[in-house]
Length: 205
Image (cartoon, rainbow, N blue to C red; front, top):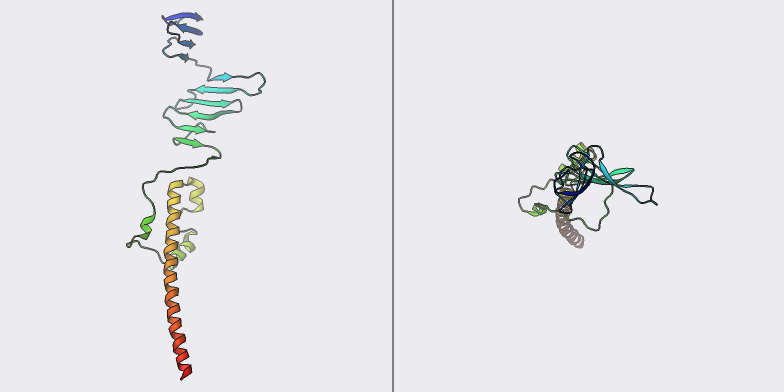
C-alpha cells in the first residue's frame, strides 16, 4: 500500500482501492501519483453501463503492440483508438497514419496543405505532349500520363492533395490544347476566306 494512503481495501503491497492524503485514488495500484490510477494485468478496459441499455461502453488501455487507449462498445471495441505515438484510428486498432478511418467520412470541408501547384504547365518552357503522344500513351497504358492506373489506385489508394494537383495539371494541359486548336481554327478561317475571295474574283472575270 502507498505510504500516503489514508484509506484502502486489500492486502499486501497492492490495494484494490486506495485514497491517499492528496485525494488521489488508485485501483490495484501500489503507487498513486495521479488523480486516478488503475493498474491491472487481467482487465483490459473500464466498462460504463446503463441499466436500460443492452450494450456497454468500454474505455480500454495498453492492449495493442504499441500500447494506447481506446473507446468502444461490446460489439465494436475499437471505435476510437489512440496509440502512444499519437496516431489515431477510428474503426481500426492499427492506424498507419496520424488519422486512419475504416469507413466513410462526412464533413463540410477538407483543407490540404501542399508544397506546390500545377501552374508550371503555363510556363513557356513546359514540354507539352502532342495529342498524338497522349493518344499513344493511352493505347499502350490505358490511362492518362502522370495519372495512376486503376490497379495502382485499387492497391495504394490516392493522396487527395497530390491527385487534385495532377487533375488540375490535366485541365491546364487541355486548356492549352484548346487554345492552340482555337488559333488553328482562326488561321484556317482566314485562309478559307482568302480562298473564297479568290474563287469569287475568278468567277467575276
